[in-house]
Length: 111
Length: 113
Picture (tube, rainbow over the protein chains, first blue to last red):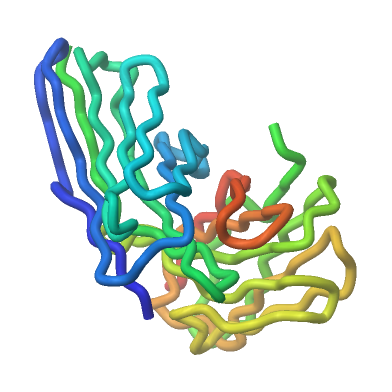
């Protein structure tokens, strides 16, 4: 079983601060996705990264895929209360049709 | 929004009874997944399907079975519900395999008493 570990598990910061959350695995990903989930809803895709070293930006969110394709980070600049939610990474692995999810980072932005 | 509907949205059942959850899609996507979500565990894959009558186990499949007789429907059955199966269950669909976007239903909150 491929495991994805996310850190930190919980993060609570003030509005306007910057933050980074991490997703790590001992296995090489064929692709990696980041989802955000709000209470009472299913996860919604934010981004997919495929190439080692790839960086993608989505407004104030920056996603980076590690060169070795074993890790990824999500950086949020000037966090806002609307960023509050559960952030999940999900990895696809070569030869495996299953999408494996990390344990999640629960982010709270305090106004 | 992707056309994916889970039913029921909430259910309370007694230990030892069978329970079936339904996932219905209108997107004609090939892949369908059942996950359970519990605090501290993220989403864990129970079973998935890669076509009609083609299913395979995930990491937490014990006590669960699935069926897919039509492209649009994927059923999850708890053969004899236990308290450890109290959870929120999510169905997801994707057009291709694991490196494409998965669309999720709104979840079913199941309580086994």
